[in-house]
Length: 533
Image 1 (cartoon, rainbow, N blue to C red):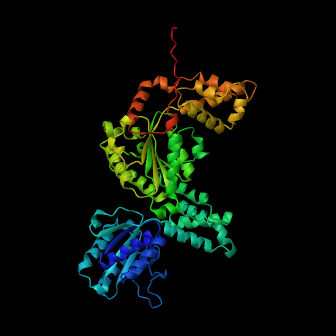
Image 2 (image 1 turned 120 degrees about the vertical axis):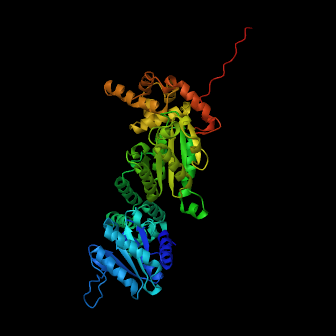
């Protein structure tokens, strides 16, 4: 049973319980109305629709205008229609009135009072003439005067089962000999995953577009539609994926291995097995050592959107608007489905909540909302949070259940420095083997000159060396150029040594090292004692 079918059963139960006013929140009128028609019929009601453009119509869309022997129930005027509905409470016939966009007219006191009066008649209306209103709207805010009468129902977006039905219907329009190749084995599940988070109409349009352009379902084309959803809501930032995925990250073998092992949780067999979707990972450690790059690489490796949350941008000068923006963030994340949610430099976002601020408690409220969401959420969103100063993070954020794992990202060791150099050279279109062959030095000697460098500092010497090689008669880059560029850098490990030492001390026993245990730190050569004999 799909989520929409479950909600429809709830609506039928509410109608049988004589709830007179249902406030259904959705942007998908056509899809939701089909479920409401079925729910009304299951409860023994005859459904009609109303909107200001055409007035009252039956489920086939035939307008009830009093012509051709029809009995006129009401016209486009909302007040006249509500008056006609009120009169029917004394006549035979159980009806459900699905009112489209009536919330706009509730700003008129007379219309609002008519709705309230209809709701108050619930107890005195005989069973055979029961009437119920369903207000179909995209606005979740019920007027205070009707809050005591209305039952609010937020209609969910299509779930995987419903998306699968939409996919099958889209493929059925193809010629019979092309249906099997439209969504071959392995692509069907990917196509469904890509559409989760879209409305039914959006998913159908994406599938149709893909079939028209490519004669098959392309999951990447379908997933690109989610970018428009994010842009429309304006509370999250869509980050473009990086090329290469985890291969673009030098070193951090423990972290990359862990990320790779969690990717299996999204497979169909893992769902059947009951494997829970991973919640997220917290990356703490020294600035410039690959935390941000890893967040972007995870989204690329898992082939899902990367959404960046900026809590500072969500704050507003108006009371209550900051909290509303944060709730909207959570709703959008839930609607997108499988994605990577990135909280960059989390300690700065939480600064007002941990150290006290003059924002009226907005930061503290945001912290509480985020903690609750991280603990209770059920979707497939994977949170990647990065932090440079872990001492500024609230302790309750670090406990198990909020994150699956906490990794400490240290300065790269000798092996990792070579890996970072290779990844940086590849980024700038250079083959590491050819760079080594262009001179007497190798990448290991360059890495030795980069001892104590962060990953970003190592990567930055590549363009510096390229400038030098280009200025020298536009020759090809070599390892000597890299070594010369490295010697001009004053690394962060010297300018912030006390802070780095404090971070390392905190990480002992509290966080898992992102670097493989066999190569966690540079190995210092053992000094032999010289005896005076």
